[in-house]
Length: 254
Ligand SMILES: Nc1ncnc2c1ncn2[C@@H]1O[C@H](COP(=O)(O)OP(=O)(O)OP(=O)(O)O)[C@@H](O)[C@H]1O
Ligand SMILES: [Mg+2]
Image (cartoon, rainbow, N blue to C red; front, top):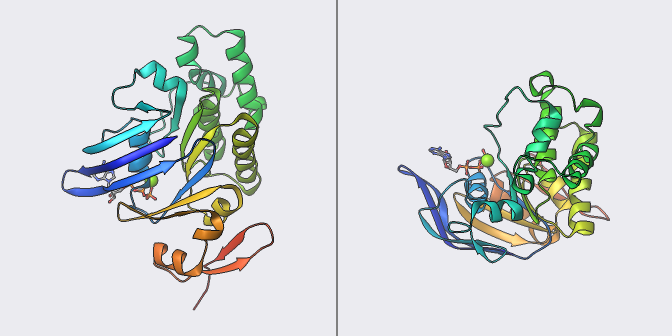
């Protein structure tokens, strides 16, 4: 499980997060939602140890992320950042292979090669594997970074806006893959997502944040109400009760 206790973070005099407490069980998909600047990326990167908190503690799978050994943590948790993706002169396959580093230390085993093949296949990148990253479209590159995270084959995957730049088909395919990873491989997936309807359709729980605080935690049916969504996003939202999941409508409402 992921456990945050009293976690807070400021960037200089910008208060970005907390204090927040959060308990996420092992398994399933959690969607972090909320307006721009709510603290979603800050919280996710703190969980993934790419950013230190000013206060509080973070545990993932029982490990304190601030003191856990890097290699051990890298075998447990993989994270995709929202930005600052490096575009080195790497091919798609080379990038995805980097995800195996915690397992292989640079020497790819047969198992590593199979994991890379699987991740490329999952993200529909097999035909593009020899392309350099700077020769891809934005959405193709986004898929390559997600493939790198999946190739790491960790119990926990943290993904900051994995649907960025994806077309409809590939957005649905990615969410379906993440759903499968949770259901069939027992992975724990935490992702930041702006399209609340994707969260409702694929996530087990939604964590809604505003102003550095966690405001609501619950199942899509619990969080997807007009009152909650209008409050979180400070904009009028209607909710339609589609048979499989609730659907938020927020366009052209007067
Ligand atoms: N490096 C930084 N230096 C200063 N302030 C920052 C920095 N990174 C984030 N912030 C501020 O911290 C707050 C939270 O930012 P964060 O990136 O966590 O938001 P977010 O919920 O991920 O937003 P978005 O949906 O736009 O990605 C914002 O007020 C932001 O301006
Ligand atoms: Mg963000």
